[in-house]
Amino acid sequence: MTDNFEQTAEQAAAFQKLWMQSASKMFQAALSVAPQSEPEALNQIRVAMFQALAQAWEEFMRSPQFLDSMKQWMENAVNFRKMSGEFLAKMRNEMQAPSRDDVDTIMLAIRHLETRLLDRIDGISEEMGALKSQNAGERSRRPKATGKTLTRTRSSTQGRRSTKTESQAGA
Image (cartoon, rainbow, N blue to C red; front, side):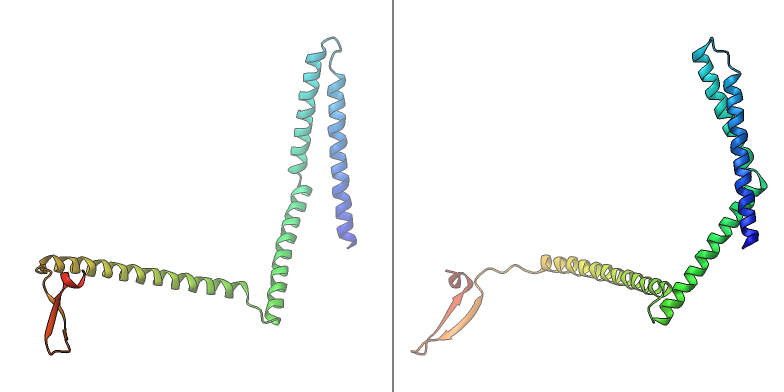
């Protein structure tokens, strides 16, 4: 714990030193400009400040302290992610809740089932289309009815039989 605190203090001191250097470079650049040419002087101050900041930040970001701290931070973030994932998996397991892998497996099985059903429906649709076209072909080959076919016969009370044709039944 003390070692970590000392390391953090050293990093903070290095950062403070960096800022002090960049601030002093900016003031030196501002004071080196002649007062008679103000617009040009302001541009030179701005350019000098940006150059000093860029150089200071580049030195800081390439420093071994910064790179080590970033590496350590990334390792801690990865370790925290692993630990939290393991903890949550253990909690789900103890509560007998489904894990993410279980849900993913079920979703994959449902997608396969859906694909199989859609393929089967497409096959049945094609078969129905073939049957319809085949029936249409057979209907065109049948002889047409004249409309005078016998549809039903009934007996009367006197023993006579009368017949009706389709044309009479519709009237």
